[in-house]
Image (cartoon, rainbow, N blue to C red; front, top):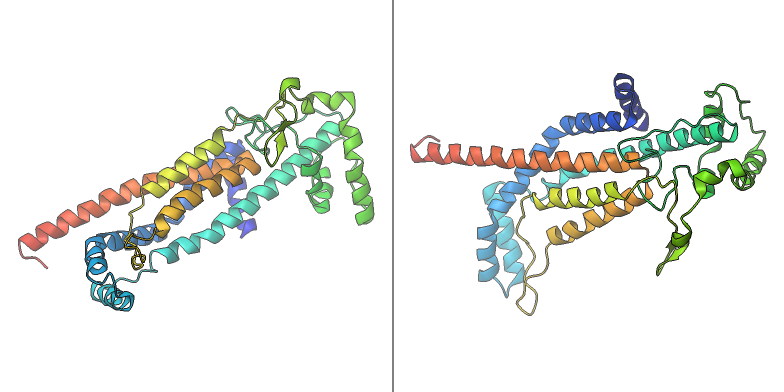
Length: 326
């Protein structure tokens, strides 16, 4: 799956030689391919939402009989020919693509960061991948991140990546590691390299904003910061909007013992998904955050289009029923 996604991204990059634009085009392409599944899922969710009045009646009628409520709920689903899981299944089918996309973005980011770092330590001009306000697309959009990766970020890049990308850079000796120990020796030499004066500008922090301690972590603001935390915040906003526009289905669970309704899964997801997107987009490359924002915005636009389409179908069905057309 990763290879397929990467080949599509590289295809768009050959058309428009800017990875930011290529990722947006890729996101549009993937969302269009998944539109039939999305439409099926949203149609099922709408049908569930249309059952809300009947579900509320059942809850009131059988408030003190959970077993009877479950029985009548299943009878209602059967009568309306609705499978409550049918709305979730298409969404679950799209989840592997999200995880594969995360892997593909991590692969490209590691590859590009290794190239940039090798260019830097060999005295060559570092070719960054800027996009709008972001100075390096392969680093997080974050004022607490430098334009170039730190030692810990470089350490997670696989040995094979270093060897492969070294072959693509003219004017440097290809990296060949005899064994894992030789690779570790190269990685362990990196902190000393970063301390050299010619690299200081890439990792200099603003003195009054160095080592700011919060409850569970500390951070610094870099002179050459990579971004302004725009994409992570846009991720939260776009993800919340996308969730908000989804039709809300009735909670099939029985009322709690005190007579109050139990919170539905919809409210939990409304909070969980934006928070999850904030975490991923804060810690991942700006490239992945850009994909997530574009995907959420497109999903919100699709939901608006689906809503109008379903409303048109309802009006059409109402007119047909009024004139006696089955």
